Length: 379
Image 1 (cartoon, helix red, strand yellow):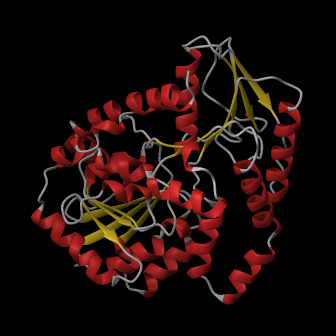
Image 2 (spheres, rainbow, N blue to C red; image 1 turned 90 degrees about the vertical axis):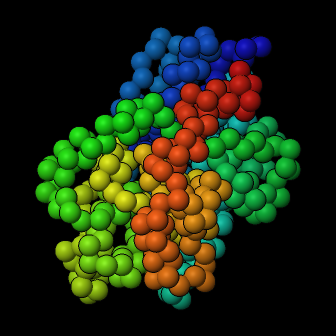
């Protein structure tokens, strides 16, 4: 453990559905077991499910519902607080400008905007160009990656490493690639009982057990490509349906499904804890994200034994063996043909569910958390 006695962990918000929040909770719990004290810098009124005498939760910033104001107030409050305290490690899982260690789970905002603009109309591009929120986000992102205290950046994929290195000219020796982890054993329990659990989910949501379901899992439908998933469904037989699990505005996508004659084949179930459980009733997962630094949901669903369709802008694509455990959607691909290829993969099944699951056993949270603590933070 060396001389490390005090760590500041920065994460603005908590949600039981969030992958970064789950990672933060897991890391804090494990670090506390080493005897190191932690100060968690977070927004007010966040219900973090952790209690320990060596954990101090420091509420900072403002909950006002304006994303620019909230970002600015939190960033300034964090930096002001850190200027008055001494920590051996400042580990940020949020975009701020002051840290020693950074979790790049959100990838590069600069790359995200570039990709988003490539898929937007002129007015949307102009709006982002004059947006104070995006300008400030880019400012603190650049300032953080160039801050003199920076020691290490944790990248959840090779894609993220390349994006940050290219966008901000960060020295490669500061990067450490450690993939995101999943709750391997908990998912395994569901995997071993998926017939029973699947029947329960079908009854709960009133779904037709004879349909072939595809799973779209994740919040932020535009970025994760729900419109692409719905368009792709057009190329598949009527027996194929799409289950949408996640939080966002549904109306634009309900209208899209209606216009395409798919209203009865797209099912919006809202956000669900352990949304990956719906893999119990599905044939494959669809995650055609426009920008996805890793894609934790894809890893969770593969741990449930399903093949996946992901875009080339998804970090998890590194784990996809084309035509065996999944399909990678590339920029100029015909969406209909790619979805037909997924259908062929489902129906020919070159890998069994157990084989697909076992391919990613190294993403077990126990293994990943230990790597972050020992190899990245050096505790």
